[in-house]
Image (cartoon, rainbow, N blue to C red; front, top):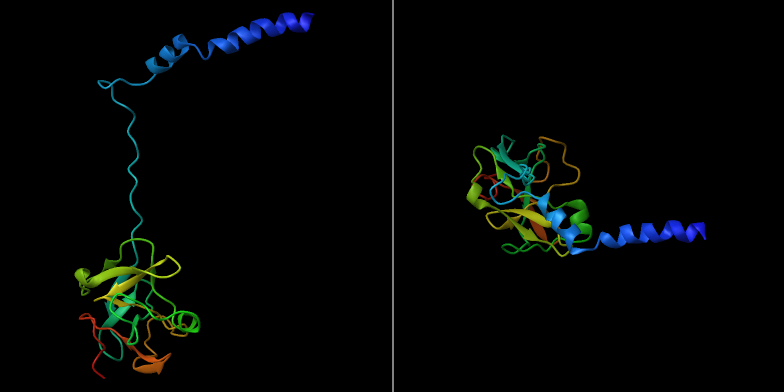
Length: 165
């Protein structure tokens, strides 16, 4: 009996939470249009990968921000890749999570991205998808003018073309 006597007032209090009066009190705690709301932190998009120009044995060619040489594949079509499977394992795509950034000497207007079959974005330069060679040491170009996977792999100049050999 005592338990029932304690539950009745508790139920009455809980029932009041859903009344119109309680809802009015809730709105009073919100700032009105004339009051200033707390400043919201601006969400800054994460910067995309860096593409830069660096000297090599072939003259200045494109590298990523970590000094890995970038390559084009002649079998690719404009803004479309044909390198998947074993090809992409040997020549990993240059992926981007944000908008690619151009360092000095790189034409920002030539940078872009395409969507691969896996949904990830791959960086392009002058409409050509960009790749790394899996065995290239940082700062070196080992595979310029190499025929593999049905096409030829070239480093790129700032103009988006293979370097003169």
